[in-house]
Length: 151
Length: 151
Length: 151
Image (cartoon, rainbow over all chains, first blue to last red):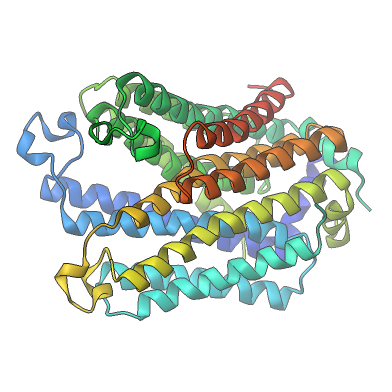
């Protein structure tokens, strides 16, 4: 029977430890966008609900910069959620530490780049390429899990 | 080699068992918002697709109460998804049952409160504070995972 | 202490292996919608950001077919994310391979059907029923996890 000490020792397995750290870092980056949205809503007084706007209807409107942050956040959800799940399953297919580390680094770097590029209005195709790298990592994970799997 | 009995015994580890139960409860709460949206769409006959509206174009429109449920649902996705992943990784850093239980309870209570407050139009800063508690729990998880990790 | 070989042997446990394969397949299906959106944005020249549209303001607009794909994608996020987490926790409650396989197959089939039906404008209640099957599987997972759990 597995005890708690055994569960905890997963963190001593290098590939798993890398996964846990990169997953936490990229999730924290995604969460930053919630705070960033809130900051702009409060400073610009632009809200989505009447009770947030002290009852002032003219403050319930859309702001293009805030919508941009929300689009970036949604793109994060669409890409980081697959990474979190596929990355964990990929670890269980037994990749080398080297291969796993570079998959994780490429993904996390691509998502940090995507956010910076999106929020700073950097001309395309920069954002497209940043997104593509992360997408490619996720596809690589999925293929390796499915090749090791059974339907 | 780990067998199935070993995998199953994770549920006997108190911290893991708490995680699994709270994670399932808060995910079920998030799923409730799908059903709640569907209920209002059907009773108010407000849809997003022409084929849902029996081909009646005037039924394809936005309803502020339904949009409110959808905003609540999106906020859940943005906050509960990080909880589900970071909470699991946090369990693997070896917290005490006491610390883990209160992290989980604070998060789940904050999200139930957030939903009630959002859907009942309770004046601010109630919803902001409810959201903040859950956000703080997630940040606490992420910091503890990263402190135990390696990049 | 658990070693890497033990972690890897999870993939040899039939119920876990089924989970991993179906989870990867349905996540890949969800990711397909990102590519599908991008394909239509590029061919129809309809964008959400000015820098994507080569600075041409008239290209920053909404297209009903693209919004349809995005609604389908959001519905996936709202339903597949719960599956990925609840499905994993359900595996740890010790279901039979038979019960687990049919839960996974019903869910994944319902989500593939949902996407095809949504994107092809199939009349209701087809999409509603496809969504309902997946929703029911998730509720079944959550109930079984909570019944095995502790608050």
